[in-house]
Image (cartoon, helix red, strand yellow):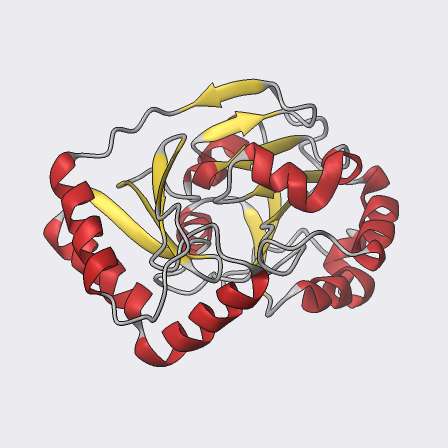
Length: 258
């Protein structure tokens, strides 16, 4: 596939914490603004989630606003109707699986909800509280983790013990584990190979250790004209789209490195 118009900006959006609150559905306000704004834009999804979860959150009508959906940290590419056009295989080694089991049993967090180790295309997602957690339980764990730093400690352990792997904080309750080199940064190379010349990225975890950071890292290495924005939630994203000139494609010729 080639970019429809290389002279136009490729707008790439994370989902959790960017277009929606973590694992919540897109709001009517976001859908109305985004669907109207994106009509003459080239837009792409960048998410750690699989396609089914992404569709649950933003719905088919919102998916139709995007040229491609990069799921599972970019390890699976689909068109807006869900057809797979590319995927990367990943096998969870027994030693790493055993270590994850130890973290699960030894964590001091007060409860578990199930679905703690979730294989996805090209990666595995790990959560101590479990992906079966309700929204309230997710908030409980996220608040606890913000003070205890459990996810950061688990990610650091994996990155130190398994140099061929890479673990990063994703969403509000989990970490994403991939083979090194197969994080969201690969999306930049995929888009460049399709002919992209200008790119704007919006995510909520663009800091080192966050699962959007690979995008920032690879943008800084590239010769693309780019900007990136770290938001604190969908309200920030709404404000960017409404108020920032780049989202009206007024200002994009200068390469900006932040």
